[in-house]
Amino acid sequence: MDRNQIAHTLDIFAQYPRCFALEELLNFADSDSTNKILRSALLADPRFVQLSEGNSTERYFIPKKSLFQWFCQLSLRLAAAKQARLSKRKVAMLMSSLRTDGRWDIPPARCIELAQHFGFIGPAWVADQYVFPVAHILSFTQDPTKVASIVMENFTAEGGTHRAFEQLAQELTQDGLSKFTGRQRYIIQAREGLLTGRRMTLQRVGDRLGVTRERVRQIEVQFWEKLHHDPRGRSPTLLFSTALICHIISKQGSLIILQTSTEIFLASFLAKCTGVPQAEFPYAGILILGVPQADIPEYELNGPLRTRLSVDFIATRLESNGLFCLLGGDLKALAENIIECIQVGQILNQILLVYAQFRRKDFTKEERVYLALRTSRAPAHYSEVTEVHNFLFPNHPSSERNIHAVLNREKYGVVWIGIKGTFALKEWGYEHPSTTLFDAVTEIVEQRHKVTAQPVPFAVIAAEIGKRRRLVNPNSLVLATQCNPKVRRIGKNSFVPKEPSEEMQEEISAEELDRILREFEKGEATP
Image (cartoon, rainbow, N blue to C red; front, side, top):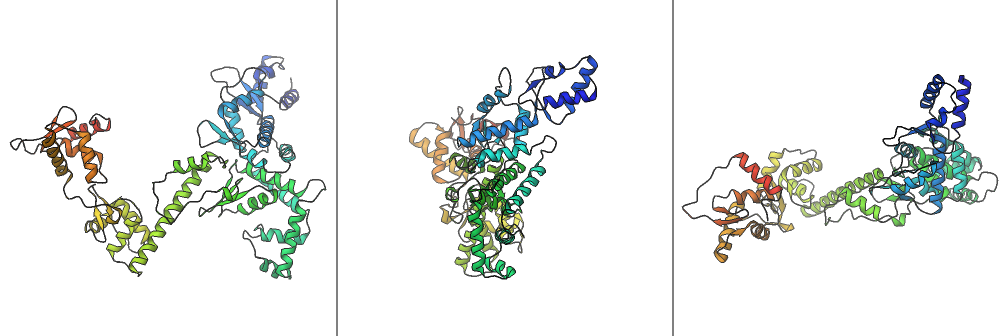
């Protein structure tokens, strides 16, 4: 076989709608030397994806174009079924249709990589599940089959890049706008922010065109009326729908857009043209495609949080409502943004409360530290208070040592709660411990032993301490019990008071302290 014959053979296999084994291709070789050349040509050809078969030595390949088209068809099927989420096992089962024999237990990694590259599929927040962003958006379009057909027509293995699809989105958008008059095009682009990256008012557009704002409004209405009533060839709606899908493909399936991004105006305009719902997440500065605004949950930014929110908590909550079709990474970014907004909202709320309380803008150092602690809404270590203080008052930065000293003065209801370096407010229900943790443990052991005449279990000591202090460091409690010079350990987890003759300070080595804490962490120091 000469080079032309090898190229022709690869051209034939590039049209295969399924996977093929390397041996199928090598059957065209007429000698060992041709076999090697054909093998090398296949491995170097960008039109093919090599699939791994676990420990199998047999190599399988699939044309990129065929795989792209297969995921387009799968997206259409999912869109028709209004389903944009599948388990990994289900995806593997569906992809087995690409084989002539056997099946896959898990989806081929290289196939999933290519599909992720073009946004057809991506890992969900929930383990072992995939989401299908393109299918989700297709489910809202008027003619998803024609949209997918145009997308498939424009795919080439060599030019199938993000930039190529973004350029195609721009071209299709301009093609759709060309269906309208010059004045209609200008007004709609100005009003939607496509000209300058900022939406222009009716008055400003009217001033530029020399017409009234009412006339601008009328022409804008004409655009939207004509958009859905153009029977000639490829309607603007079809072109805009395809442009939106191409835009999502170029973003690898991401359906969230920062409102500070330059692409938000194009994406929002295309979604508006095609009937795809979109929503702005409150205070987060994020636009989400494929979700109605009414379905966005509200978060109270200015009220106190009853629980410490986490990324996992919020992402799981968003995922569980079944309305979002976001990639796991996008859902995580959204959750992080929500938490940041809540925290900022809390800080702003606390600032307003303190301003109202002191009724002035100039604070003393004690007042500034009080404000920094109050914004946390929970007990905080002095290092955390220092960080918040320096954020709130950049013109009055202070060191951790100075903040600690101010907190120790316990002004404006600030109290030390018995944990090293940790402070809270009396208004939250905290008090300065009247005794040290060692003395409290001694008192509990003496009182309980006097009543029961039995050794006092560690669990009882922990329960009683909980009645006296809202927060206790578990490690500190272990040390205050195990290393207490006034109590003696009986057995493994119980204690009795020492006789006066026994009371003497025992020096415990660092190694012994480490051993005690390790036992506690393993559950050996508690029942």
